Figure 1: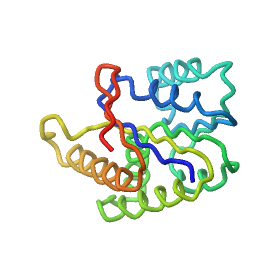
Figure 2 (figure 1 turned 30 degrees about the vertical axis):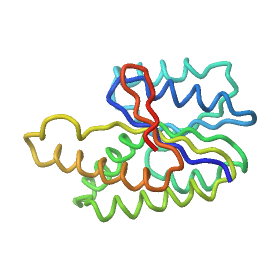
Figure 3 (figure 1 turned 30 degrees about the horizontal axis):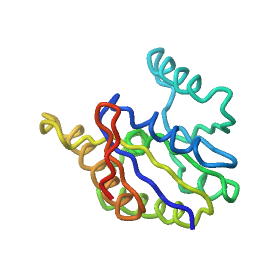
Figure 4 (figure 1 turned 90 degrees about the vertical axis):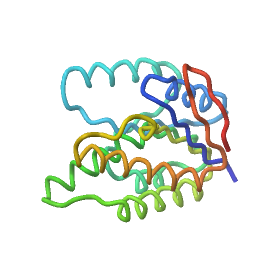
Length: 178
């Protein structure tokens, strides 16, 4: 069975580049699942730079803001999949819930993360997931930011339990912690 790998770290720590390098060392087809929504010109520039980093390197790219488990289950067998990133996935889930006048809670995120983890384990290719470590800073001053931090933390714990390998990236240097 192919491994499930989680890569965490702070913003601009080098985790996405590490995940891409890791995936590109695996022979065969590769699929990049991007969770980042197009929200403004600055975000569009970030998306453009990430696409440019994969250009000419035989990546299939798919933008999936919400339905990660479903999309992963539809990926061709033995394809190496890089999901970047879980942090924005949680953001997107919270945003969609808010549009419906609902609130995401840790129990809901745990269920969704468990389903994603199960899909990753069932996939017959390596699955690499990138996330941010958001719980190492100060406690946010507002309830929405605190809930976001908590939901990302819960998601990261669930995926880390499922993962065969977990890396923490700091200053561009990966440290394997599982």
